[in-house]
Length: 281
Figure: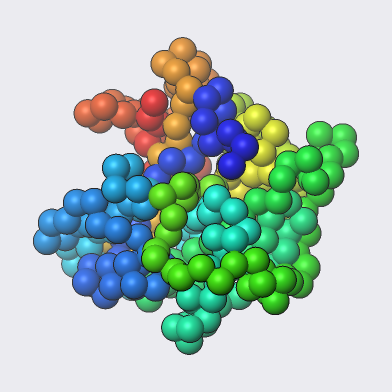
């Protein structure tokens, strides 16, 4: 970990998902992915890796409906492991479960891809050291090539005991309906910088990270916002380094016509595709 997910950067902290059946989802996220329970009620469970900080919240809405196709919302959330050895332990464990997964090398990172029982996408990855990343004209070189799975497995023979305590939310990747409007929201509003392009996708970050947020129109231009009781993304948090930086972002959002409202100890807004974002410190 190189400090891309701490002050003075702006980054993603926690993700909340709506699920069809809380018990089914919890079994998956505990036993297969390796989270621990931090808090639990009848319809909500908060998950952690260090016993203190929330990383993922699962909620079962009233009258919940299954995920529909061709909607905006979550493409995947990405769990960043501290090291390649940790990815090795996770990969060996996950292969032992027989649950399907995909894999890719992105030059900046090595990643595994999993879909939960509700169709929510998950990436589990490790970063290569940033000194190995290639930048040109302010853009970082990323691609999707074959992963060296055997090389990863050779990194460690340690026993799997769940996600390590140093695990964090590395980034979030979203389906949007209008790429240009979403890009303007995240750059001119929230203060992220464009760091890479891909067909129908834009990658954004602060502090020179390869990406804290990605947006795409792979579900189709004009993809509608899903119903409130639909399985999928409920909200995610963006962490600001201090109140002054958050105030600047709020002013920029409001000047661009976006609503920001106060809720308890955080602020709430929505991107142009209706993805809910909690702005926290």
